[in-house]
Image 1: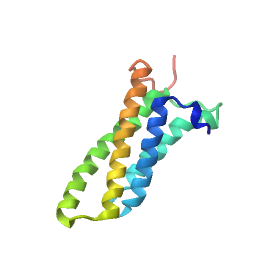
Image 2: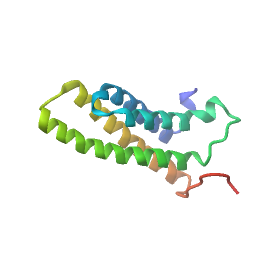
Image 3: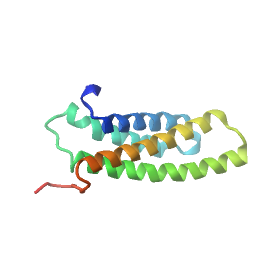
Amino acid sequence: MDFSKLNANEKLATYGAVASIVGAVMSLAYGGSFGALSGILMLVIVFLPQISPTTKLPGSKGSLMMIVGGVSAIGALLALLALLTILAVLGSVLVGGIGLIASVAGGLLMGWASWKEFQSEGGKFQIGNKP
């Protein structure tokens, strides 16, 4: 894996994926596993072409990033609503709260980076076999 070969959008998505995974681990008690799953999927989409050049993704990288990042961003917004409820009920839960915030920020960052990558490819979904 050569991080220097990634474009700016892929690097941004990688940062978001790592933040989402770390945040999910920190906030495991609050159901942070979704952030970990979406982060791992994003890392696979970004790094699989480098690790295994003969393996073809089932669509364009931007389209797949858009799907995973979009779902992650929606999940992050829902987690943010849960965070507000948790903080209102429990007060300040430091490690879990920070982890949930990191997971939410990572999910939103993945969504933004995916949108930018999708737009840089022309904004057309390309899933499945290309004609």
